[in-house]
Image 1 (cartoon, rainbow, N blue to C red):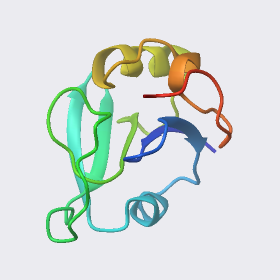
Image 2 (cartoon, one colour; image 1 turned 30 degrees about the horizontal axis):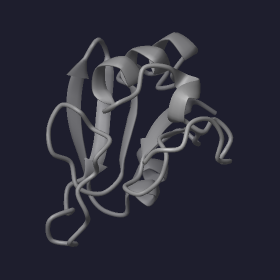
Image 3 (cartoon, rainbow, N blue to C red; image 1 turned 45 degrees about the vertical axis):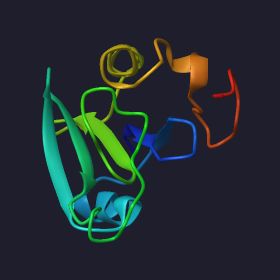
Image 4 (cartoon, rainbow, N blue to C red; image 1 turned 180 degrees about the vertical axis):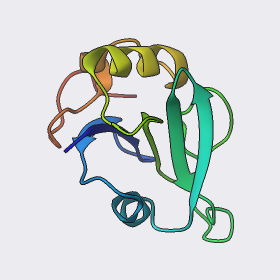
Length: 116
């Protein structure tokens, strides 16, 4: 099972494992998938219907406006993220973070620095 980065409004950014396939992504995001290519073979998935569903703005994404949860994975067949991938994503796409242990949760538990 590959590692992905999950950002949900009001929660810490988390690294989670997910079963492969778009159905798993669809279930996590709660709507039709919208794909945004970020470069360097990273892809962001978000809920295409977020406006219609009245989802809140996600403050974690530093490169634009996303509503509701989003997931970042690799674009290639192996969508799993390595520790180096996670560091790169946090440094370049996640607001206010620079390392995987700073404000992320790698196991579904709260740990590390609390967000204000």
